[in-house]
Amino acid sequence: MDEIAQVTGFSSGVFRRRRERVLGELGHGAMLLPAAPLQFRAGDSEMRYRPDSELFYLTGFTEPGAALLLRGFADEARAILFVRPRDPAAELWAGPRLGPERAREWTGVDETRPISDLEKALPGLLGGSDRVFFRLGAHAAIEARVVEALREARLRGTKTGTGPRAVVDPGAILDEMRIRKEPEEIAVMREAAAISVAGFRAALSRVGPGVGEWEVEAAMEAEFRRRGALGPSFATIVGSGANACVLHYIENTRRMQDGELVLIDAGAEYRMYSGDITRTVPVGGRFTPEQRALHDVVDEARREAIAAVAPGVRTAEIHRRSVTAIVRGLCDLGVLSGSVGTLIEEGAHERWFPHRTSHWLGLNTHDVGDYARQGQPRLLKEGMVLTIEPGLYFPAAEESPFRGIGIRIEDDVLVTATGAEVLTGALAAGADGVEALMAGEDGHD
Image (cartoon, rainbow, N blue to C red; front, side):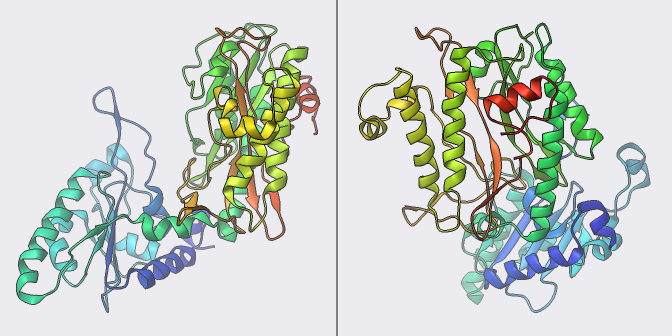
């Protein structure tokens, strides 16, 4: 295993092949991808660094203060990585740097330079391009250099007829590459899912009357780290009682009470890839009749949506199956009345089910990729990974036997050649399995 694989989980050949594919699609264009900037909390206290997903996808490089330039028009130096130089004084405080020489060996790019060279060199390096793929608004300092390079190229271009004339979002190329996972990515995502499941088992063992939401969060994230994850892939949600009706509740400051439900939405980030699971469980270990009835509706929607996942199925069909199960269930419970089809057309369910059933999953928790192409919902293809996460939320102020109950159930699903693989299927989701988990048993659906 080469050195880069020991750090990233991917061989250098994986990143090289991705760069070659991008270079082939750039034509006479260039692509510039800066590293994510450092983030600070309370003045000068650095937050833990999370590398830019696109830069990582093409290089495996994880240091701040870097930028990758790909030049589709060039005959040489087609992939140039700008990095921070070695600096013993700075490294004493923030840790070692690879530096240009080691970064070239490590990533296999054509050329590396100090990041300080970027400003002066960029106009010349872009001179042969007809457009620049760069994400506006993502990195102010480097964006200013791109704008200046465009200005200089325009001035020269009036005489030579060369130089970039447009800025294009890198997602025009990279999103379609990233939406279908390669075998190496799928292996890493399986591990991210497995770690996420382990975190949930640890967290559920802490759930009980009088326990703080924050204690459950701590148990979850400790297990993530214990198993080698970088940490949570997003802010962990532990919403007990009415907090479960707040879709992105992250304060986690309340003590849960007997007779309530607690909604837990969390996932581990492993080698830069995300897991994402939601389970809603009874604090006291057993569902009340009303809680179980509503939980069964949401779980049926989850099952129906997962059963629909297969190559060639349109993304909208996944949501349609989920919504149909939700509306049918709400009619059975007396919450809605009328024709299921008419109720769906009227959006009658949106009061309690206000979000979509799925999102893409990968290097980002809400990963890149369009959900529609040319005005039509896109077709699922082998290698795509998406969540299935229906939910129902009845605010505490609502006059209903289900008031104050919020339920969401979420799994991570891989589209296979013949159907679907539930990456998080080891964690029970149905009511019986959830109660078994809460009793300390290995619950199964």
